Length: 165
Image (cartoon, rainbow, N blue to C red; front, side):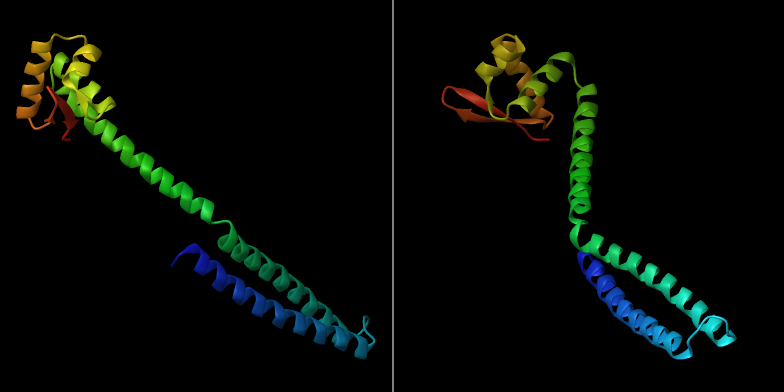
């Protein structure tokens, strides 16, 4: 059950209870007027009942406030939870990528990081970004392709490189 529906249910229940308590307080006030109260035992009983109903009225006010909160202000919490979940997934992917990098040599790490930064990077641009020779980039990409980490797609006279992971 989502928070908005729960808030509406709580709000409805508290409104009904508030009307009941208001009705009871009204009856006690009428009894006080009829008895012309205060020194008699009957009046003390009415007074203690009024005190209890005032306490109940405060509790119902709290429940009503909780209902309002759940109806109108809980969307921010849901957004925050969704954002935290997305951040958690992103951190998991980042950690997974970093663990993968530890299993590779320095050249493979350099090339894979550059490919991750710019998906679809051409081999010529990759050569310039990594400061490696054309032959070395080609050799490293062949190794990464054999390991199933990247794929190369022909793009004119060169290849565009994409992550498979």
